[in-house]
Amino acid sequence: MMPEAAALKKTMISIVDDDASVREGTMDLLNSIGFTTETFQHAGDFLQANRLRDTSCLIADVHLPGMSGLDLYDHLVGCGNFVPTILITAFPDEADRLRALQAGVYCYLAKPFSESELLTCIQSALKCQRTDARGS
Image 1 (cartoon, helix red, strand yellow):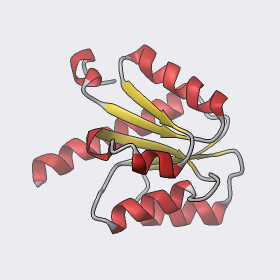
Image 2 (image 1 turned 90 degrees about the horizontal axis):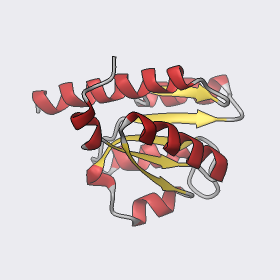
Image 3 (image 1 turned 60 degrees about the vertical axis):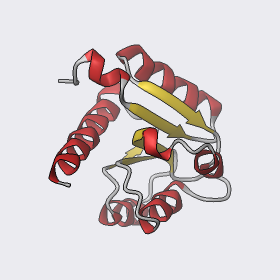
């Protein structure tokens, strides 16, 4: 069960993927449900856009040119910015998956993933974020 529509409009999901079709498809799906989204081609674009404080959940490709999705997550955590993160990849690797999950990434999804898989991951990430915010 997804949060109420009013809550979704306040929920910014940032999508970082160098594949335009994945960025746009994911954005279209999430916008159709009621989320607010912003897309970025590279990790550096996301970092330079100054959207970190607005981002409730980050969806990032594992294999990005320059800084990978996992490197982006590690960078954010290392700077004290915890953003619930979902990593997606067309080249799943068990060692990468374990490293990501041990680092604190919420989900590691292999492309193509189903809408329900992605939405379940987002719901889990947002639920944990709300719990963390209340506990702070």
